[in-house]
Image 1 (cartoon, one colour):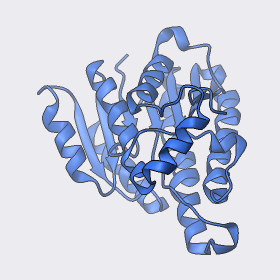
Image 2: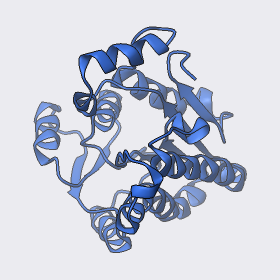
Image 3: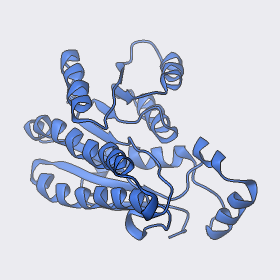
Length: 242
């Protein structure tokens, strides 16, 4: 059976790390991104010619964008057997300051896209009696974070979705899991001062942040035949932080 992986939010730090790991495994890739075309172009230039490698720029915060993405994928003839729901957006702020527009944006880009992208790939997975759906969540989805209530709620919804869908699809040989990273080294960390970064590091037993490649390695592990009995799990990778 030909494996094909669709990665949403593939231009993010974690998304690119996952794409590199899967490309090294010679898995055909469909990369979704929205704005960071330069990073996708750079990744594609580094790949060996002959690999199946496609990229589509779509706004997944709307149902029209999701429909558009899958119309484009259908035209290629490729049918994803692996879905990595990685698209996301950060949000910091007190609950009383959250606008309806901000609420809608965060819930749509994370929760709605995860639900409907999964819905789109499931029929083919059921026909093939095989599939892997991996949702990139966060430790905040399980324990919550002050000043990140909206973000925590969205990730918590993804965790519940993961557990429920895993039960629904298990009879069809499809696994559904979520990876919940702690703090990951990424450009987003540039918003914090060196002092703040040191304070956060000191709270983590391993005294460091996760590397994107470590998240990607866990993704690869969950795709292996030996992992076919792992489903419905929210797997934290946080250096013992939570």
